[in-house]
Amino acid sequence: MTEEKKKCFVITPIGDDGSTIRRDTEGIIEAIIKPVFDQEYEIIVAHKINEPGTITKQIIQHIYLDELVIANLTGRNPNVMYELAFRHCLGKPVIIIAEKNTSIPFDIITERTIFFQNDALGVLELQDELRKAS
Image (cartoon, rainbow, N blue to C red):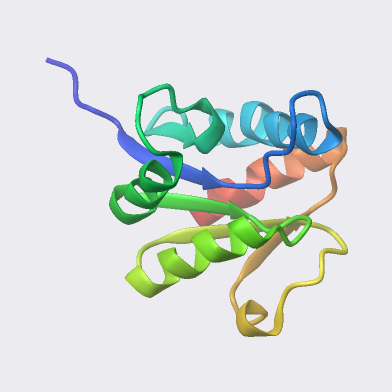
């Protein structure tokens, strides 16, 4: 009998198919988050949920129920900020990441944030920092 993996929901800007935002997001998930957390967690991202239903309801459900959330504040996306605020209200674990030079809003500037350089070496550095944070 196999144990069911815990769930990790990734709050992130998504962008349109083929956009720079989407490519950056997919790169962070596939090259950094999955290699670090995939053994213990099922990694879930809003645009990859294939179940029928309301997207917003599904996102809220994952933020509410999942054991871990990783929030990418790069670009200060309003949806990301909204979803992060909801997770904070729950008092549940969240790891915050942001690309270097991202301006963090006053309300959350005191939260520990892992800043990363979005390049090949930055992939390895962010993997190391995420392992330390988990």
